[in-house]
Length: 396
Image (cartoon, rainbow, N blue to C red):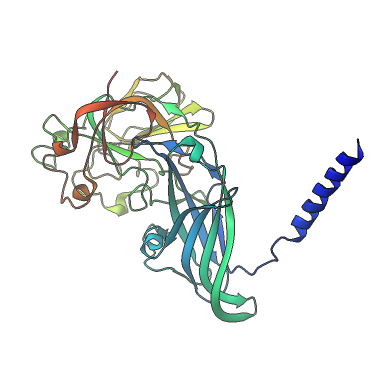
């Protein structure tokens, strides 16, 4: 090795040593922050954007109340790293309690924990950073022995974003007019906000869950008496296996609930919340989950091998549900609610419309004509994830 090469190596070692010495000094951080999972994979949605969904947990370790002021998501490898910033109403809208309610204010009491629901969108695969950090601005105590409340600012909670290589599934249903309800990815939607304590741990199993309901040719979810399950367009539709796999859990004995009201929560247990259901192991540690099926319609039992497209059961209204629909999600464990929810794409379908979000949010019921959301000409889509309120045709 020549003298010039030795000199370059020596300079690099010196710079690395100085960089380590120049690291920021230790800082007192009364609110600790950590991600629920170490990484996620962004998924291509029907809007052409890549969507990353994950959560942070904040815990106040000091007797003095801490107040969150701002949370910034940073690209860990970029010199201009700010990807998203949340403060004021934007912060409060994503801050949740462990009881699945809105936090109401940005304060965190001693030993208190708050959850923060994140949803990032990227225009292209190339725009997705490989790693994130999270910067906090808050009010908290000066130090371990000083209760004086001062502004604090620090960065933590490293998080990885994998390249989009999500599972590709077949459709869980067939035919036209299927609407993705309570779907991904905003922080004010039912499934997205639900964290459940199961088997000694908190899980967001329903990050990407969809409630599939169906419109008839007149744009109706239901016709006639809404208390009769048979008057709902989705009722009785065939539920299909999304991949080859093995049935690992089933239930087939529960009666339909009477719509359009939710059942008495005192009657719902961990065993009955999912209604009649099927869990399929589809390989690579992935499990597909189908819920709220008709009594007696489930065609498989644990241990049975299934093929993609095979009829597994029929759409019903069993368990914790107010109207007939298919609840579907993908998880990383055999427990449908005690596992982590995962993104996926459906290999092919038609995008046939979009229900108006504000109108749907303020609708008194599912009754009426929703055909105004339909497109004049459906659009062919491949390997995308159906986002909330889209209308989909599952056609060959």
